[in-house]
Image (cartoon, rainbow, N blue to C red; front, top):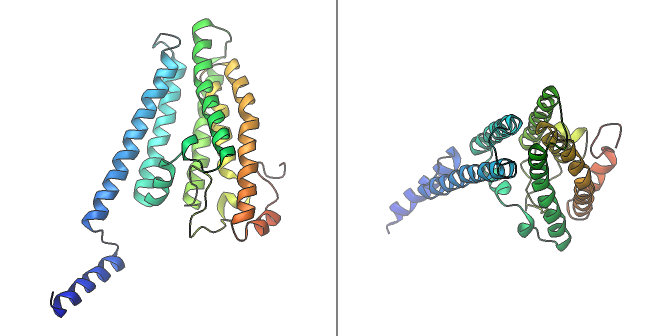
Length: 254
């Protein structure tokens, strides 16, 4: 290769880096990420639909249809936002679940949390079949509003913090985020997630489902404390952040 050609190649590379132009390889990787994200969303929808409609053995479950519509419209909007604005965070969120966790305690926590999440869908579905409890339609719709509110909180967290991985880990360039919702509480992602999870059994019209939410609360708090311990030990500046922002989940309460 001539010196002129080498110089041209270096200039082309520098121009791409400076202008944000993607190489064919980057375009291919981005396309794969987008496809994986959309396929995962579709598979999640099918799995959740199965958990909601197979136990009662009927599609005449308007609360489930309404909940699924709210859940997946919100999920799709957030996914599309991440595709455009923060593909790195989208990639981080694609790797989750018990097997992805690095610590044994977190694998146990996430296994229990996954079973609890399944219970949040299956118990209301069985409740629908056997009529264990009743909720007025307005209460179920209020549950859908809680689900939407939880997703809105998650969106604000994602917009503020690109390091919100689905597992407990530390990115090489990670730093303490103390702006936006993080100026109010130390764990806004957990706060929004708890609102969302609380809304699920209510949206599905099941008092017994609400008891499932209460039962999994200790597991979620266990994960929160374990993550906070990890960050305090490994993330520079996190202890100082803890001293500045006193509340974990609810401003001026706890």
